[in-house]
Image (cartoon, rainbow, N blue to C red; front, side, top):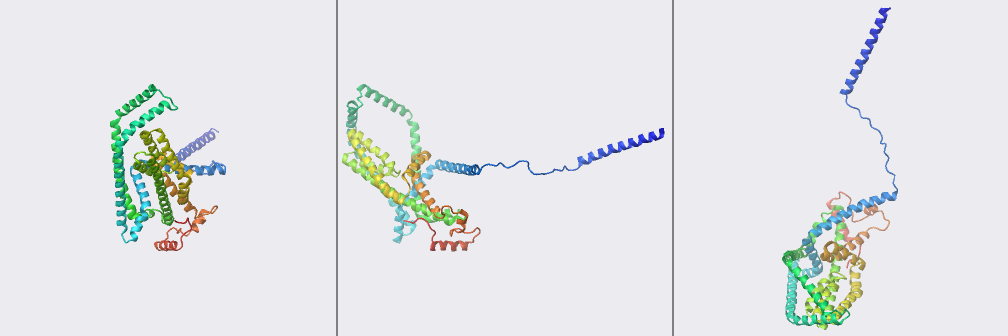
Length: 434
């Protein structure tokens, strides 16, 4: 009996040892083996948002990216305004005098020689005009000195006897305050002279950039434009080329219309100043002509100089008449010249002109106001040109497939040449040229 019990305990002990040994071996194998990672479906579901919210979000992030890119571009343009502004001025000048270059070419001269002659003649004309205006100003300074004293006395008498009824004590107080402000300004004179010197340096550099850029725009304009077009993808080069030509045509029409309006404003103000006996008639006309390149407001602001000269030289009554002349000229421009010329040649609404000028002033001051309107006119022409390729409600992918100006990806140079030839034979629909 005892022997059976001992044998049973020994068997149980052996089984227990075997089980423990099996567990130890299994643990060793689990440590030595590579871990197994089990996958499965996600337990998260995509957010179910209304279609309007999804569409608004898609438009929003694209709009943010466009605004950021536009802001960076404007910041860079403002940073390099010393170079950008002369190049834009040269582009405007080239748009104005390009017909003269074509006329000289028709006489048998080469394009480069024609461009050089136009630049030299224009430079000589500006030098003669500046010399004439300078001589007129120098001759009128002597006569103006006596008129200034009389004009100041008239202003003082008007302040006493006019609607303000100022006393001598009040006038003396105003004069003392003005003298104190001038003295305070005089302490800042060295810093202001430094700024003036830097500005003069920028002006001189800008003049040289304008001269060279104008020559190369006139002499190598087609080559420069072809180089720019080649930077576009091959499938969009024809569309980019046609858009650029439309923008150039709009810019040319804008510059010509602006020159006519500016000349009319300058002549009107000069005639009024001459009749009223205001000095510096030539200088005032040149200033109004330059200021009129900022539409709607430029000629009025620059004409204020004529009012100030009339006030100082001949008193308040003549200044009031001069102000009336400027208002009359502005009414002539706003109701006759602007609708006839700008509305016919450059289809930009006056409200768009005002908004463009305001945005240009905010971004780059007076140079921005000068550039804003021709830029808006060119963009408007390009948008209308590109919109003419598709109709309202048309699928854009189908429009591209049926567009004769679009080539398939990977098209060969021979196919591109054949397509360009077909385009010249049968041009795509678009706004009519001048």
